[in-house]
Structures are given as C-alpha cells and as structure tokens.
Length: 210
Image 1 (tube, rainbow, N blue to C red):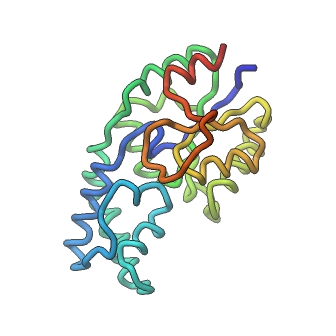
Image 2: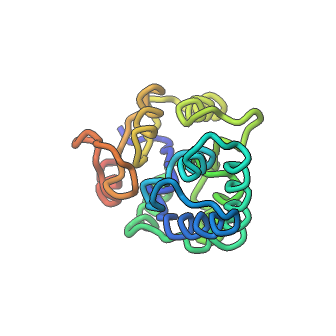
C-alpha cells in the first residue's frame, strides 16, 4: 500500500552537504587555532553538531568545543551552506512523490536555520509539508527516534501509512522503534550495513509506490 506520508533524512539522503560542512569546519578550526583530532572526512557528517565538534576537538574541553561550534555556525550559515550539492535523481523523486499526493517531511539532526536556508537556496521549500529538526522544539529533541515519535504524534500520522528514508543506522532505528517502513538510501555518508532488502535508489522508491 502506498504511504500517505514520507519522512526524509536530509544530509546524505536528499543533499550532499559535505563540501560546505567540511569547508566550514576547516575555516572554524583555523579561526579557533585548533588542530583536528580526527580527519575531516564526510563520515563525520550526520550526528548533531556538538557530537561532531567534540570528535574534532578530541578531548573533554567544553570551552574549545563551544568555540568550534560557534565558529562553524558563523561560517556555515553565512557561506558554507551554499556549497550544498543535490544527489542525482532527487529532484525528480520529489516531483514524483508530490505529484502522487504524498506529504513529505524532513526529519534532520541538522539545525533548523541552515536547513531552511538550503531549502530556499535550492527552491525546494514547496516540496515539504514541514521541516523538523532537533533544535526546532523547546526543549530540543534528545535524538532522532524521539523527534520522529513527536512528528507522528503532533501531525497525527499513522505509522502504517508512513515511510522513512535515511542513510544511517540512527535513521533505521528511528523508523523501527516507531513502526515505520524504512528505506536505506543507497548513497550518502552512513558508515553502516543496511539490510540489503531496504536499499533503494530514487527511481526505485517511486516504483515502490505501485
């Protein structure tokens, strides 16, 4: 049965934000005088910003982590987000899903401010019924499974009529604990091993509606 709603992860699922994020972290490290404890690679992308910043600082230093976060936000929100790339086939996928009458929502660990800026930059705002982020509520959602549960509750979505698409183990967990059918993006940055029968590409997701 086709879904009435689909929840999409953002980074690594709909967009390739790695060029902008990595460039902004590089700029933030220079500005703060910090040496990264781990390589600046795309696999860092996905967790909430404080988690990534702590990994780069590499030690329990709240002052250094906070400084890196602030410097990153300044650079990314002003310039880095513009380097966002779109995965092949995604615009056609979104067009097809909306044409089929399916309500689309974003559920992301990314902050709400740059998420909305990217959507505006790509002229994608009209595709989505709503955009949900960890920091978009007060208090912030503790993790993605909790955010998805809140979305289902607040939007009165039925789990059996809702699919989720993502590129990480956390996305899969968020779908599973909330009873959603999950599809793993066969692209993106997720360093994990999805079940082969959940892997999908954009056109195949459209085909799955039939």
